[in-house]
Image (cartoon, rainbow, N blue to C red; front, side, top):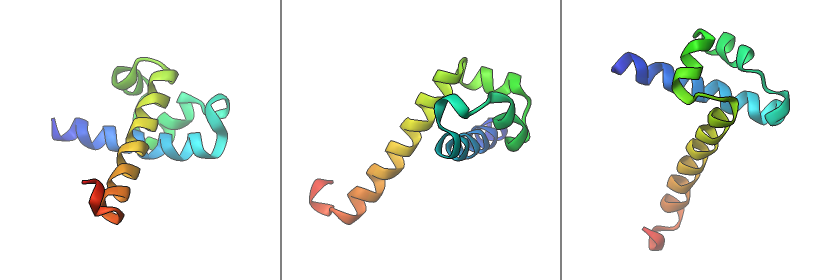
Length: 77
């Protein structure tokens, strides 16, 4: 299970970078897989579709930003 988590983090890190650089339509699953050093099947097992990867990536970014917000605005904890 720890290995899966490591690959999930790699995929999210790379997908975040790819989506931010190239947008939804310019991002390719093949590129994400190559840069994350995983095979494409692993990405599809993780999120099923490109849209799924995008939504998981946005959710991850939102969760991170909420953590930053809560640290800077303690009254909202």
